[in-house]
Amino acid sequence: MSNFLQAKFIQSAEKLSQCPEFNLPEYALLGRSNVGKSSFINAIANNKKLAKTSNTPGKTRLINFFNFSDKFIVADLPGYGYAKVSKEVQNRWQKNLEEYLLNRKSIKCLIQLIDGRHEIQKNDYQMREWVLSYNLPIATIITKTDCISSHNKVAQAIAHVKREFGGDIFPFSANDKRYNDAILEYLLSS
Image 1 (cartoon, rainbow, N blue to C red):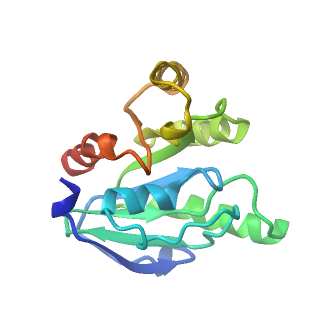
Image 2: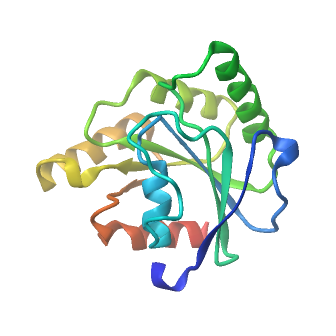
């Protein structure tokens, strides 16, 4: 399915007033720094060079918009948690992201990425509570499942996240493409 979608980077924005207008459903990616948001975009786009990946947490500093064949938009947001920036910059990010998440009319659903190799982190729970407090639609992607030692442990990670968060849960691996079709089907049908 991903072979039929042409994905391209559109632009970056620091705040809501700079965001481009699309007449398409938009999915905003939430997740801790280094959870694999850029790798997720690259995998569903079937293009390893579309979104810049880095081993250094906190590299994404702006809202980056990607158009998938005029079917939907993915907005890659700065990761929450660890980032080597001042408190002032972090506060500005938080204010800008809250404004975007609460007032962007084209957002169809938020997608929270959780690292499947680890327990759900405190800031993952905090983000989820914030999203639910505003009654925003959200789905969950469990990343890095290829790094989990067995199929059984992947199933356990999925069951754990399902218990904690509920809703739509999708396993994902940037290396193992078998999960991509289910995720793309969700993005195209939501």
